[in-house]
Image (cartoon, rainbow, N blue to C red):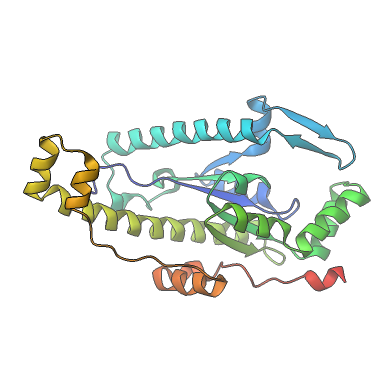
Length: 273
């Protein structure tokens, strides 16, 4: 059954303070065949409404309009992949063979974590970030605003508010290629984790569909709520996260790669004192 149904499709935010390397890294992945959505280009191409904030020297985007347009795009990409999955006769074992067969869309932007429930945050030491933004020609005010944001983890904290799982890659001493390799490792690990959950659920579905009494109940047109109540799956329990350590323990147990990228290793708050 698991080789017949659609495989899970992940949408992952690649986010971070401006200057941490999101665009360069995502373009490297895109050149290697991964599906990337660049929000800045997407906003222009789809005429997403925005207003200029002259005081902060930035554009303020209509997030409701952006979220709706991105959702439609996600559905289109997912349908295209599902068609490819069947047309080429792929199985779950084929998914990691190439970026083209991996059902993952990476959304790149400092706004991406508002659009996804999985996020990867690129981090850069504030002093290095300051140099990068000065090279871009940012105003002194805009440079300091972003450096302060990186120092006190503004984007990372936002991710915890909006996303169910958050990871980070510290890029200060990494090249674009090295950062891209880290991101690839993390993307594949996240998909492995999602696939294990999917296969577990499909196993339960197999057991349910093979139950003769359940099939008869479905054929008889009984309400699905009654059927599930009678033929309910055994409760595996749930993991409740109380802090980052709990998340780390769970991630390490399920997939050792993921714990390498859990947040909490970078604390630059003393720079603001």
